[in-house]
Picture 1 (cartoon, rainbow, N blue to C red):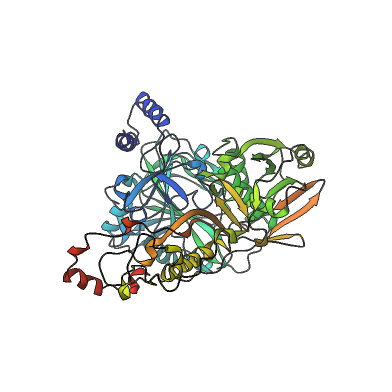
Picture 2: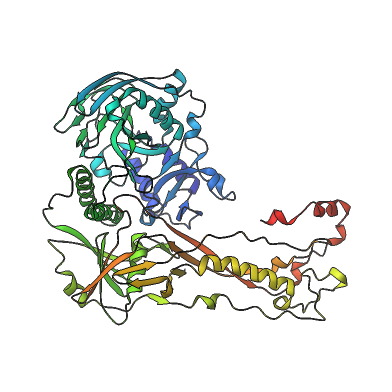
Length: 623
């Protein structure tokens, strides 16, 4: 049944199946439940759709565990290295909102020699060109649509059509050279490159328009990079009403195949499908070096709210409308010198995580002050919520009871939270309890080598693994490796229990600093050699349990205390550059007892050929 669910998904996704057949298939999926097959980029993945794993994504198949890799479909004949995986949309976070596909393979030998000709300025700061390119490159670009890699975007209600996002440095380099030759010299001051992340958009004649919007500028504070122009490459031609409409600017109603359009990102614009056929185009942007870009905290705060509401729209679809409004206000503010005064009621999300109630909008987080809830615990819950970390097998937001509240201001929040105080589920924890000191090694009767045969030793049924010097050495090394991950982590997850290291949250003035880990160094495990197939020392190092660790690289959290509330302000993006976070699972080692099953009693079959193989083994194989 699972194989049928997998294969029917791609058969039905062609769009030619009757509605009643699709409805029956969806009902069958909704009745299917299964455990995840693997984990990738912090997301649990499944090889077929289920009631939980409904969102399809495409990944490099080599990144999937080899033991289950062949279960996943390869729906694109042209890109067979891409596997289809299904994820739970409730687990999506900023790192995984978008599914960016690696497609440089397609252009590696395509002869990407581009030339932009017949430049025409159809509005101020807006140009159209004809793209000249070799037949091989043209065929590769035309073949993008046939890859069938489209996935519904989170803002599908406002954008129309289908889309997938891909990365190609080769395609970007070719377009960069062509743009540098074709654009007016006066507009190229500081031009760096074409962004290698492309959106491939497809519209059928009966699809809705891509609603009027502004493109959010790309911004990288570390490199001083900002985008100023959008570039559209139309792979198909047609006519529309209009195909591209720049507000207070020009409009294009006829498009030839392989027309390239470049326009200033200040323009609000709208696109309509072709009347007479499929519309397929690529979008990216021209990136410039501009070290003098100013930073506006209010713009950054609104951008952070828009991103947060996008994630929350999985649970409350009405929030998608507010997110779109915020994105457009931010994009306009980049060029207009600041945000225009807002109008109307704004959304907040009231959440209850176990015993704690809080209110959030993606930049502001409010908690009721109480003796049971510290600032560090408020900061920890904020981090878990904002990054939608997994507790056990469940995403944080899926563990919360949530409701959307629209209001004119924030004055209602203190009184609202006052009567909803509870005990914090984030428990302070002494991490040293995970790492008990090893026993003292025994001397005299017990051999030092784990195999028990070196130097004439004999391995008996009462062999004590916890007191063997060689095993203790490996146990200590395994502990050190786990400590390197666990000790610097501000938050631990033991199953669904949330544990907090208060020492990793430093309150200084009106700021909460979240400390992170240092770089790790590799650990080399060596083992004794020679003799029959007896267990080496590390064989007796087992997993006592696994600990989820969350490391965060984030700016300080600002906070204020007023009216019985802790008010935290968290600017992750700094106006659209994203800081990182990392979540992983760490095995905590233990020494397990010796068992007679550890010995290969057929060792009489050991011969010189086996001995030669052992001699070829060296410690580097364990790195």
